[in-house]
Image 1 (cartoon, one colour):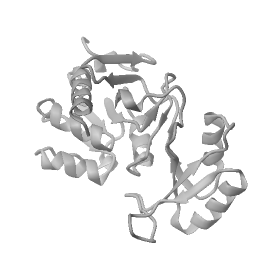
Image 2 (cartoon, one colour):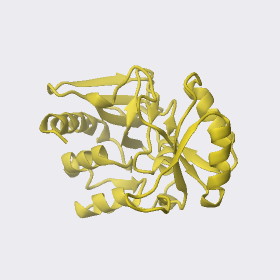
Image 3 (cartoon, one colour):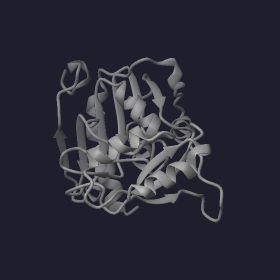
Length: 239
């Protein structure tokens, strides 16, 4: 990561810290940007109940002296903080580069406010843009799901660790197939098709999940895009 890019993420993380003041239960996504967020605003998280979307995030938080709780112990969250692999001006996102998209979606859906941090290189006119869409699949159904996807015109690649033949297995025990949808299939239709396909646990298309998008730019500016008001005003800055 270049110094300018890391600085952009830190600046965006500092802006997101403004949303934490009234929050008690904080959900955390997965990935390098979330780790930057943890390190940048550590002092604002020490008195919060943190809920991690993955083992990776839980360990990152623990390494800083924080103590995330198991998601099974919470029913709702005040705020959810995450990033995205790609995002478009409508707030539609592609996520799951780290394989945690299913739990990320679960935590985001249970939160009063969802805030996503990205740097300017993650913003595109339309998504997906050059990256595949991760699909989490029951391991025993991998061959069947892959064939169904290919028959429907999807490009498919089973995600495997470098130098290995066995598939990447997520924290939830799923295998990951990275897919490229047919060129003219709308993203909403892709999401619906994946959700109806038996054997699919979850996918990395996030539509309607972003309440606030915070974009860090390499020149030091931070842009905040609000898609809808939080369900509880107590989670917003200045409340």
